[in-house]
Structure formats: C-alpha cells, structure tokens
Length: 400
Image 1 (cartoon, rainbow, N blue to C red):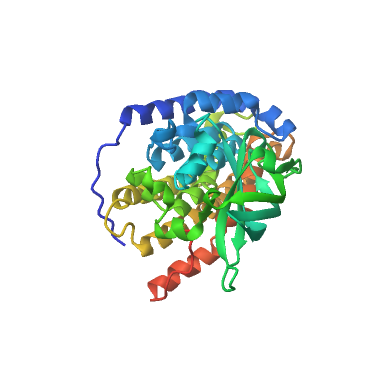
Image 2 (cartoon, rainbow, N blue to C red; image 1 turned 90 degrees about the vertical axis):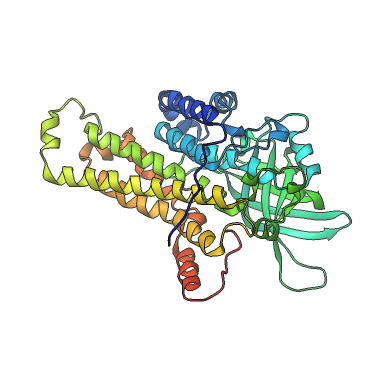
C-alpha cells in the first residue's frame, strides 16, 4: 500500500522538542525510583507530579481546558523515553495520559465536570465490557467489577466499559461510562509478574447513576460523530479514538526493549567492566545486536509513518480510509509480538546473572511479557480482519 503524505512543519515544534527533552531528563530519575515503585506496586506521587509539571498529561488535552493539542507523535516519543527509565511508569503515563483525548470527544457537560475546576484532573480506565447496565430516567444505573485500572489511585475519575441493551430489544451497544471517584471503590489486587509498579487495581461499582451525557458511544468514536466536536474543532480529534488508545498500551514495550538492547550492548547484568572486545568480537552477538536494532527501528518507523498518515488525512473529507484504519490497528497489535521476539533473544543471551533478583534486564523481560497479556496486544483477530478486508469483506472491528 502506498501512502502520499503532505508533510507540514509540526504545529508547535518548540513545545514538541521541550516535551522530548523533559522526558530525557527524567530517565535517570525514573530508574532511581523504579525499585521502590516495584516494592510499593504503584508509581510514586512524586512521579505523577513530575509528569504534571512537565505537561505530559496535557499533550493530547484540548486547549479549551489548558491542553496543548499536540499530535500523537509527541505523546509516543515521550512515552518511549519514559519507558527507557521505567516501563511501568510509561504504561501509566500512556493509559492515563491518553484519556484527555477521549474526554475531548465527550459531551461538553462531562468535560466541564472533569476539568472545569481543575484542568490537571486525571482519569483512569478499564474498558472491558463488564458492567451491568439498567436504563433509568436521564441515564443509566451501573454496577460491575473491572480489572487492570492502571494508575487508578492517582485519579479522580474513571472510564468504565459496559454493554447497553436497547429497552426494545436487539443488539447491545458498547459505551464508556465516566464516573467520579466517590462513585466507585478501588480494590488493591495488583500482584503481578511484570509491570509491577502500575498499580492496575480493580474497580467496583454498585448501583450508581450515570447521566446520559457522561457516556461515550463506541459508534460515535468509530463514525467520528462525537458530541465533543461542538467545542473541540482541531482535526487532531478526528483521528479515531481506537487508534490512539491501542498505541498507549503497546508503545511502552518499544521503549523497554530499547533499554534491554542498551543493557545487552553494555554487557548487561553488571558486566560493563569486562573487556568489550570479547562481546564485540563474537559473531553471534554481532548478529543479535544488528537484528534487534533493525527490528526496533522498524517498529518505530511504522508507528510514526502511520501517525503521519492519520494526522494528514484526519481532516479530509471522509477521513482516514477504512482499510488504512484496519491496517494501522493490526500494526499496533504486532508491536508486542515483535518486541517479545527481540526481548527473548536478548534475555536468552544475556548471561547467567540475568536470572537473579535485581537484574534490570530480567525486570524488563517480565514487563514486556506482561504487556502482551493485554487484549489490545493480541494480533490474532486484527490480522484476520485486515486480511479479510483485502479479500473483499467488510470491516468487523469498531475500535479502529
């Protein structure tokens, strides 16, 4: 498939560069905090405050509520660098930091409730359709138990998924329900093999009223008929919501695997002081490093190429072609598979010290494997959909 992109200079190159530099500056800080974060099973409040001060949560936030409305390229570049300091931290940044984009698609009343008094308010999520919904006057009554709500303890609102069945019968509609902190309970359940510091706790809701305007229809996200367009006019928000969220949970693996390659090149696991010529002269290591570097470069290049296409075409009549949306979704789902291929080879050849507690390369290895467990990072269904469309079938995925 050939893409013609009319490249324009980035809207705010200076701010983009500042964001990247701030992320670079935080890498050693995040590495220093990483072990304590793992022990606490959540990233520290100091890191959240650092991110707020750096403006990372505002990258995709609407200008109406103090955001920067930068393009997704900036957000992912920041996330890659943060992951080179701590993948758990990058995961939380991705999940929490992507939500201002979705909030910009909501009814203005909902946006005002979240950001009206404090534009720095943070929102967590759990999108699995696990809620039980009852129609009531003016909205819905919601109950349910959700898992994997990353960074939830740092947030004052939550986005929760559920299926809404029409009162008259028929197929259900997926919606995201927006709830304030007093309407849900956070249950401390996050004991995991990797991504240990994400604080991806459970969220429990019991018979809570959610007004209609605090729900977001998947169909609006898919068809680009979001009510938030009445106040947020930037073409940025015409990039399909599904395209951005899936990158938020795959990009951290790219930064973490880059860090694994750095460690391997250094000799990994406290071997940096050994004779570098021994490693550099080993033909197997040479090939391993070369292949890893090229694969990671390919992943990053495809992601940024896809962003360029989306940014360029989002404001066009008809928007981004559906075949491209489906392909880009498949590309995003492949990031973990490709990173795992690199991570497994690096870990397998990193030496015996890598199996002991405290090994940084082992921690990253487990983080990348844990990220693969997220449903968005399983490419099977997305490959079938993309292949079927090329063979003449209709798209079957509404989160593209």
